[in-house]
Image (cartoon, rainbow, N blue to C red):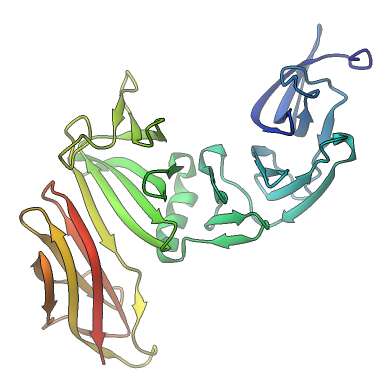
Length: 341
């Protein structure tokens, strides 16, 4: 059956399974004399033989903006192909894949790299230059990074290869590994966590250690890979304490966006900040910022239900609330409510 093929030695960077066939992207075809690379090719195997990919089974993606394939995933009976300058949807009939149809669904949305493609039960999250977007089963693209857009774009522009996306199955949230740099004399790894159900971003900081990768074990626990000569694998949390398995503290920050409380040319006054926080021991710190200023007012050390009145930085057109913990304790933030007039 392979007599029309000059070679079945096909190497590839990305792959996914669909209808008993393996579909691969960004390929290299090797024969006895030469090797040819096709970064914009999708190829597919014979039925139920994923290791046999004849060179006749190819699909060429013509992206007018150029670029190469950086990822491939299956979704709802089709294939999603991520390129550096566009996202394609490939519809493949199970009976005859040669009758495929290809549509560039999102021509102006390019994927950064394969490490920011994260498949979840009802769709796919993907990191682009401007946003992290969610592709649902209907192939609609919804941005989710409005609240951290400036922060995300700064990193996607300066050092996109450090970004990583993973799905935290246990808590149904998306984990963005944002940075692993030295802050003063301390090595700090910063994560942003996106609660998929509530659409809320929070922040998690690991001080004293640098992580390169994150993934899930079969028990749905997060595992981090430490940036050391041995690429040490370390559990995210050890049982009973808010530290990772290397006894490195996990510091948590919840920060809202700059929420508008008045028109641009007027100011509103924050009267109270009501909170409900459960902290194991010493409580958590709450800060209020107005109009995007770096200055802030430290309102209280939170534990339980409290209503706090700010006295100094309490007037402006936008308000931002930060709740943070640096005491290596478990903290649960139940509610934050701002009263203003």
